[in-house]
Each structure stands twice: as C-alpha cells, then as structure tokens.
Length: 380
Ligand SMILES: [Zn+2]
Ligand SMILES: [Zn+2]
Image (tube, rainbow, N blue to C red; front, side, top):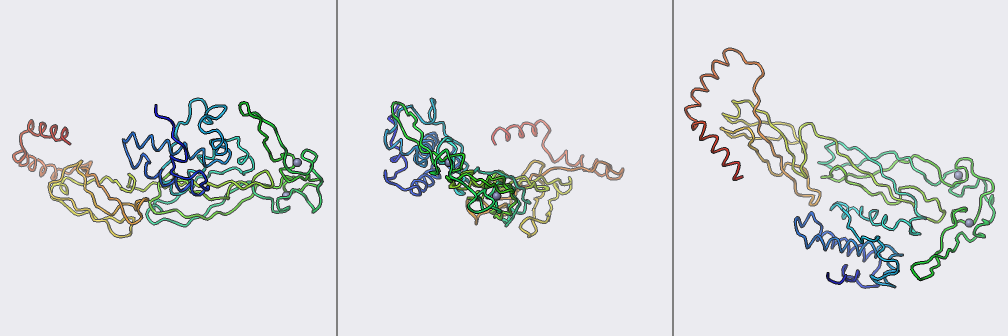
C-alpha cells in the first residue's frame, strides 16, 4: 500500500492555511471528485474519500493540533477508530449549501467545541410542487430552546442576584488532566454548574427556572431554490438551540424540504415523466394533446400517426430547472398508453371488427411480429 499522503498536500494547501482556506480547498476538490460527477470511476472515488478524511481532521481545531504534532502516527491510533476512516455520503447539493459542515462536526463528538455549542435542529417542511419550478420564499414556526427573554439568558430574576460559583471559584472553567497515550494533557473545560459564567444564580428567573433558556416559538423565513429535490436540507446558521453554556454559540437549524407530489408527473432529477393514455384512434391517426403546465404555458404533445403504446415522446426544455445550472431545464417525457372504453356500443364493435380485418392484412404475420419485437428489445 502506498504511504498515506500528508493532509495538507491532499487539500493542496499550506500548513498555515486558515479555516476558510481549508474549507474552500475541500469544497472545490470535493466537487471535482464527487461520485455524481465521476460515475464508476474508482480512482475519483478513492480521491474523494482521501479529501474527506483530510478535511475531517483539518477542519477540527483539536484534531488538527494533534495532527500537526504527531502526523499520521499519533499515540492512541487513528482518531476514526480501529477500522480507520470509512468515508461519508455527502450529496452534491450539500457541497453548495454548506450542509457538509454538520456531517464533519459530528465526527469527534466529545470535543470541547461541541460541548459549548447549542444543538442543531432538524425540521421537515412540505412545499408545493410549484416551488420546485419557481422557487419560493417561505416561513414556518419553530419551537426551540432559546435564550430566555425575561432574564436575557442570565437565569436570574434580578440583576446582581447571583453569587460566585463554588465549583470553579468564579473562573467559569475547570482544568482536567487526561492521558493521550503516554502524554499528559491538560484539558480546559467549561464549568457545568454555572454554565461557564462563574456565577450561580441565587434567585432564579421564574420563566426559565434559572436555566437561562426556555422553549420559544420563532418564525423562520427561508427560500426554496428552483429545482429543489425532496430531502434537501437548508441550513439556517445560528437558528438552532441556544447552548446551555453562557459563552457558547447557538446550533444550526436544518430545514429538510419535501416537495409535494404532482397529480401526474413523476420526477427524475429535472426531467418530468408522465403517462399519456390515448384512444386507439388517437394512436393510429396521430393527435395533439394540450394540457396546462407548471411553467404556465400550455404543454403541447404531438403524437405522430401510427404510434404504439410504450413509445415515449420527449419535449426538451419543459421540465424543471436543473439545480446545478439554473438556466437549464429538463424534459417532459410522455409514455404513450392505450386506453380502451370499458363499455362499447354494438355499432362500434361492428366497426372495429371491420378495422381488424383490414389491419391484419397490413401488418406482417404474427410470428414475424413476435420475432421483430424480441430482436428490437434485445438490441435496445
Ligand atoms: Zn429566564
Ligand atoms: Zn462554575
């Protein structure tokens, strides 16, 4: 096996690179090597994994410090556990929306940074199908633990209603010694009894019971972009839960969008698939079907004479906007079906019998038809 490459080298950055340089390098490389862009390319796939691993370490300040000190041979073995880094599924969309941040921030759950951060929240939200065409500005109500508005997050019912925290003696932090392999490391932690503030509330706020945060309902506004697909998570930075600790940062809110189904279209990315049930006469003689469409222009589907059920008709540029290139639209693809009336008048039956006799004469013999059908199926 080839020697493991240096993480900075993998991302093509300097060892002094800033957080945003690391992120930008990761984002552009990940777009280049994403499996969606390189289907079936094993080399791109292992590159993609290598980039992810480098980013997982270098984007985490504690892990980066360890790596800078020890390189790949750190005491205690791989930070990803005994089986090493396994790779993560990141959707191409997440690379644009920044949704990958939360994926990587979960890797090293015990780190100090996470402890002082409020929880991320995930809510699901349904949008009408039309939003996938036009995009939409939307809003919803979120109930979350937020800073208590009565005591402004202090937890105290009156100003000065607190005393020095005995656990940390007012410092807000406590030091713990822990071992990393043979090394003693001093870890500084936020003091939990006083939530890092150094003060203990003696007269707690009645609204939040001295916790400094309470369940509150907020209105959140957000935009759905054209071409959005179900499962896309919109990230609202800082709109998650207020942290338990006084000096922490709030978590993020993720809104997972679900697009309502359309009465007749199925989606295949930006293409729209539909069945078009037609009478025998329309298939035989050809026709033009006009139906209302999501782009508010009438959709005209031209069926040529002599069409057969199962054939498809594609109308380019009338599907949904592609979420990778806003100006391009997919196609509408109509699958032709044959629909016969469930009841037939006697006179119609008589006419169809006549047609059948004539048609039998114009079609090749049945065995040839079967053979032709089978060979075209095998060649397609
Ligand atoms: Zn309060
Ligand atoms: Zn304390």
